[in-house]
Image (cartoon, rainbow, N blue to C red):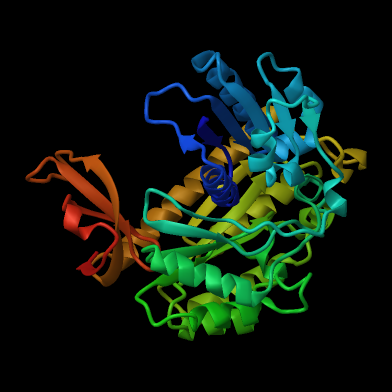
Length: 425
């Protein structure tokens, strides 16, 4: 069969789709040529918010219209949480839960047999870790090092969609990294649901993983930590990254709220004071570091006073960019059982716009602070149309990222793809 994947959501989903595609190819199937109608369409969904669910449904309906004769399989977080809702969408042939997703190649091999339209299991009972590694079109390789979460924050359904925290052994991931480097990867991003919790199922630790990956090869490569909870981003980890051979000065840290009162409601495992300490430590030992921050607005209990407290706090932090989410009510979360102030939808949207503006200002300030400095860029393969503001003699530009995640561009040169170059920003 020929197949096509539509992947929505996080880097972890993209890594897993890549692994599932490789498994199908190993079974003798082939990826559909661009523009050709596939025999099989797989939608790997996200369900972090109501907006994500809406995008999932739009994608499913669009793909069914575009490929009316294909077998349509929907999997991922949305499929695990709301399989019946997906099965009711006209044209969906099969719904596979999160555990069943990793047996996709076997499922496809048995399509001629009679299957139930919905196949899901109790994901919290699953102990198996299914690895994944992908190389996207931007030269980065995403390496899955952990899955699941044991935190059960009051607004979040991810533990219900992904299951308990689990991981492979460090030696397995070292070999995965070496294989990625042999395949030509120059930048590897560690992905997972709660990667700072690494070692939960093997008795190892996150810092031990970082040390092993840093010493895995003498090849010319760099690594990034995709996201780490502030209570798990220890001073030891920060110091290690500052003096490591291969890890980039780039952090992504979930804050979610700058109000201690709201953090308690959310059942987050830190205070804003601890978060500020982590940011200050990073900036002390790595002044050039990029710090991205996850922020949620409009959760239940976020009164006007809490919001103003939050806004003042996040504005004061020397971070580089915000990743803003607008809260939406999620079934089976404890926040819905609490008697709390409900932020009106329009006010949620207004607060989101405010933080997006704060984010843009911080990003421009970060870029401006590093203009004229040296940076080590990894050039990507995508061709971008030149503009009067960014001209090029051949009409095209290529883009790349410095070690501290500053996006730069230069005239397109095919020989530069997936190579490092020292530049003046």
